[in-house]
Length: 172
Image (cartoon, rainbow, N blue to C red):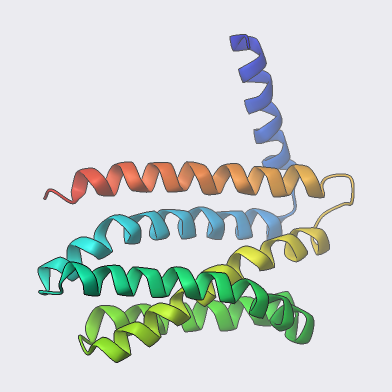
């Protein structure tokens, strides 16, 4: 692959972002911020749990429960989107994610942390599943694949950047 090819791909990516509607651009900003936050959480959460005195078993338990919630949440998300639509599903997902994040970082009772971790994982899955119908309903049929691909690229850029930056900051 030549450097000209890479520049062409990057140019098409920027063109896709530029010509998408305002709702899509705002949603992609949310996707980017979500990627940064999730990568920071992945780096910092284990350190935080260790600092508050949790054992390695307890830390692994909480992280596994969050991953299990993410798996279950994908099935639940389909029902939620079909029943309430993408907008309400996003509101419910973000509200629950914020509440559960506050719970598992501020309350150190293991059952509360486990339930909150589970719901946090569920909400992560809902956010991921809701992206496709959101982009489908807010873009032209000919651009929906390019927009969804651009969103995937933004998520990966955010996850890489967040992991790198917060990995550096974790020593501070």
